[in-house]
Amino acid sequence: MAFTTKVFDAIGGFNTNLKLYGDETDFFRRVYEKNFSVYYDPAVEVSQFIPAERLSKIELKDKSYKWGTGSATTWLLSEATGFKRILKITEFAGRTCYMGIMHRFRNDFGSFYTYWYNWGYLSKLIQGLNH
Image (cartoon, rainbow, N blue to C red):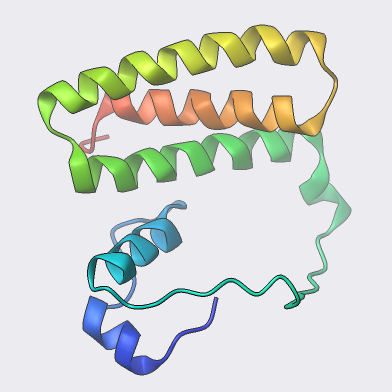
């Protein structure tokens, strides 16, 4: 991502209370709320060295779960009324159960990642912001 200091200052920077993931999601939610334009350029490439130990199945599981909890935290901070939260818990309970079955039959990254992401999201919805 790239942005000007005008955008950064206008939305108040990153939310430092979001320690594990979700900070960029929250950032862009606030960018949209302030009606700044956002552009995607598929020609932009970024190279990053990732050590092999960070690509193990257990590391990917942990990262996927944390991304889910971070995304849920961002959602809870922005929209977590009682009824909406119950609906979201129901939605993610269904998604998590479905992906729990699907990733047992598929041996692909997408199913594995989505299951653990959904599990993290659901867990955070149930725990709420106090945990």
